[in-house]
Image 1 (cartoon, one colour):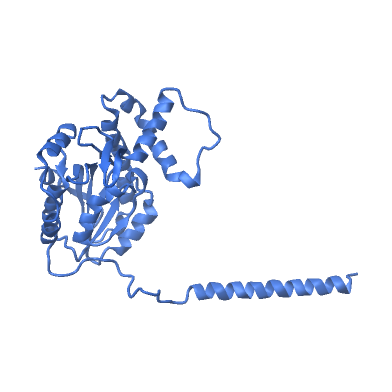
Image 2 (cartoon, rainbow, N blue to C red):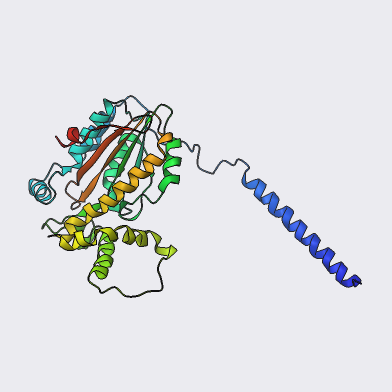
Length: 319
């Protein structure tokens, strides 16, 4: 026997639930209704059209850059043999890729660089040549967007177009030659660079030196990326301990881990490559606000439409 009062309550509760469900379905349906966002007329990528070539665009960008400072140039190249100024490198990149059919109108720029604003210097220059970039990177330059990000990026490449993928960690060098430090605009303190890399190095040193503390917080979502950087640097403990200059060796250790990850991601998503992909990777070297940044290129590969590496262009870039 069910009391009429109880039955009435059940019926009312069921009706409320049904009405709530209908409201939720209506709201869900409206979420898929095409709505033009206020203030936006297009969601298209900023692939740069026009008649100017990449080399012409680079020349315009570089006209606003300072000339190479002889003292800084010598300092950087002494500590990082093989490094070249961004100014020289960007000019060569545009020329080399232009010969392969890369243009501002058919090329999507993709980057995996650190979150630090200093890592934007190279990226911003390339934006002015090839348009807005698709970002794969996070702390220290690791490709945290992974396979999903690469797949989405590949779908955005123009039909019969190309991708230029640039990645690598970064390191600062002060005007006094201190590696891992750099002057920043508007800040009196000569600051750490890269802060994420140095924090990971200190974490690793605590383990190898036996000073690490036991913690119940093995991983935190609120600092997930830094936790991953610390895990990915673990294989390089002995290498960093044995280095004459830990801060100098640090970006190369990070690069070796990133190089494996990025090439694995490309291999996993190579079916999405359109006409071709150029992979430029190495170490970004940041200097003070009034001098040029540098880059030590360690890989400059060309992938064909089938996702095979068919050419290394590193010698052309380094010559």
